[in-house]
Image (cartoon, rainbow, N blue to C red; front, side, top):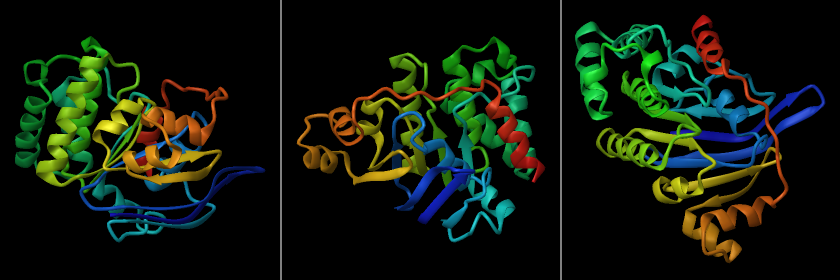
Length: 261
C-alpha cells in the first residue's frame, strides 16, 4: 500500500531524511517511531504531498504522489500533529466540509458522518461548537473526520499527544475497529511506546534521518535484548535529549496548502 525507496529530503545544507526505504502492507498498522527532529514529520509530509522529495520514490496504492497529487489525496486521510479543526464550526460542520472537499456525495456524507460520530462517541455533541470540546473530544473528531471519505490509508501524526490514558485507550480502540472492519492501512507516529507496542503490526525506527531498525515489536526487543519496546527504542536511538519547535497553527496551514494545490 505504501512503498518508499531511497527517499531523501534536503533543506539547503541540512539533510532531514537520508535515503530511507520501507514498505507498508495493505491493512497494516505501521508505527514510524523516532526522537524529536528525527525526520518523522518530514517523511509524512512527503508521503502526503505537502513536501516534494529531493530524490527517491514514493508509491501510495500504486500512485506516485509527486506526479498525481490530487488522485493520491483521495486515497488517504490525515490527522496532523497540530490542530486542524475549525473551532468556530460545529462537529457536524467540520465533518461536512471535509466531505465536500473530498467530493463525497451528500447522502453518503450524512450517513458516514452519523456512523463515525456515533462510533467515536460524539453524536450527542454534533451541533456543539468545537471550541467547547475537550482535547480528547477534538482528537476523536479529527480522527473520525479522517475516516469520512473511506480512505485506503490513514496517516496519524502523534494523534494522542497530551491526552489522558483513558482517552488514548478509547481512541485506539476505535481506530483498531475501523482498521479491522474497513481494512484501512494506518501509518502512525507516537512518542508513547506502549501504544506502538499494543497496536502496531510492524514498526520502523528513524533517527537522524535514517531508519535504524524495522520489524515487529517482538523482533526489535529480541534484537536489542530488551524487555520493553521503550528499552529497544532507547538502545537504538540513545538517551540524549532532543528538541523540536512546535507551531500551534501548523495543522491548519497544512490543510490549506494541501487544498490550494
